[in-house]
Length: 273
Image (tube, rainbow, N blue to C red; front, top):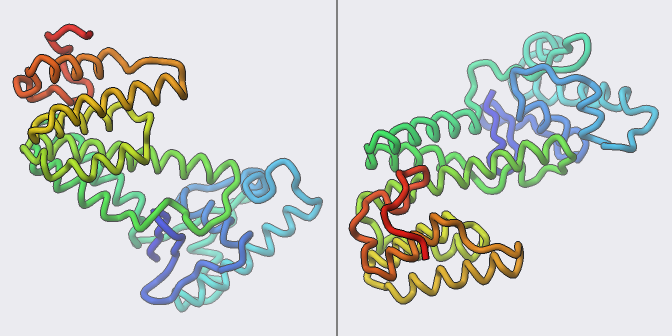
């Protein structure tokens, strides 16, 4: 069984989809899918579906949805509903567990590639880092659980996945910048900074990219825009690291340190302004 949560929810075998279209059963399946292989307690399932206002029949409703899901899974896998209950969507005595077997789970594939790419970046193998991170990011088909109603439990999972995706994007861009792809990244970084006007590291990457692409004035304008956004929204200035990058660009030294834009790099020798 193949599970996809990095985009619209999909749970299928071959071309036989098991995810129902009805909102509550779909939400329940999504909850089981994001934690595939783990038992989820009934109270957490109820909390996800109804949050603070569950009906008296909540447990019965969940059990009914489980029966519906088992039927869909059985049809997808071409097995009996008893086999689906025994091997795939199991009752644990206090909750339920979705066992996908040997099928792929797109979030797990993404996580594996992202971890490998991050390690390659740390080791300075920038070409391999970029390749691995791109492979991981290719698993995304849109926003996580894009077509699923979400309660508090799924919202937390979706937020975590989105943050991990953004981190992988940043690391891939860092690897590409280390390989000298400054001009090629300006457009992508400009769009990301518009989408995330308070994201310091993304603006720092754009500043360095613009400077090394021969556009220092635009690079300095990017810093000023970030400072304006931070002051207006959060009442704060950019961090010392971002100011150090700004100072290096003002001084014409932004070509001198290949780790200038790297998070976690050694402190810059340049003083902040």
